[in-house]
Amino acid sequence: MAELLYILYTLAQIALLIWGIRLWRHSRKITLFLILLPIIGLIYDNAVIALGRFVGESNLLYLINQGRYLLHVIVTPMLIAASVALADQAGVGWAKKRISHALFGLLTLALIVFGLIEFVRFAYAPEWFGNTLRYVETAVSGPPIPSIITIIVIMIIGIFIWRKISWPWLFAGGLVMFIGSAIPPSVVGPIVGSGAEIILLASLLATAQQIQKNQAIGV
Image (cartoon, rainbow, N blue to C red; front, side, top):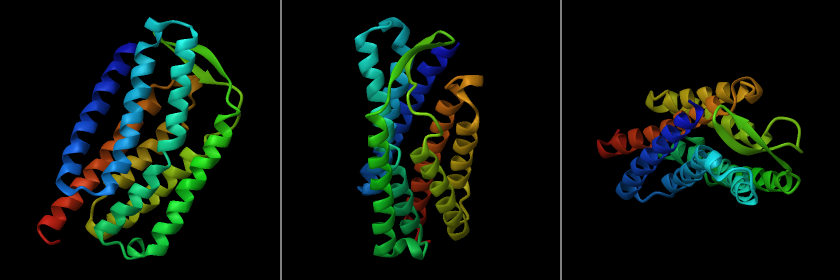
């Protein structure tokens, strides 16, 4: 069951990538590029988990799972910069100021650097879940701080966008991701969190599309 879900998750992320590319071709805004990078990373992430049992416990599977964690560390905080840019395009007052972009850009960079410092300390062990095999991080204890901060910031920005253009879905996507991340993987495995990631990224793309529509009709 789990391996089938991860195949479906991979296909869903590919569908999001196609949607995002179409939106980017329409606007050519860097906002969408900052959303597309995490989508590409999650296509890789889900595909590695889906195919892990076929590769088997090996140095190859170890290395490509290291790549999963590295991509998460680098691209997840980029969603903060993308959300601020969406708020700017939606007409949120504070998000239109250069200082806001600078501060959130520094926050994004700081979270990436923090994640990279943690990454070099990571150690990995093979783990089966359902019928999937992957390597999981075992050395660093505690919650993934950069990911949690990223989700909280997206939710807060989502509230501002909601108030400005009556569009609640970015906040809703962040809330689903927050709840999904709070469920311990030891209880349900990684399935819930991976599914919540799809909803979060879909909410970002849907928000970008709605803003494009609003701008097209002069709202």
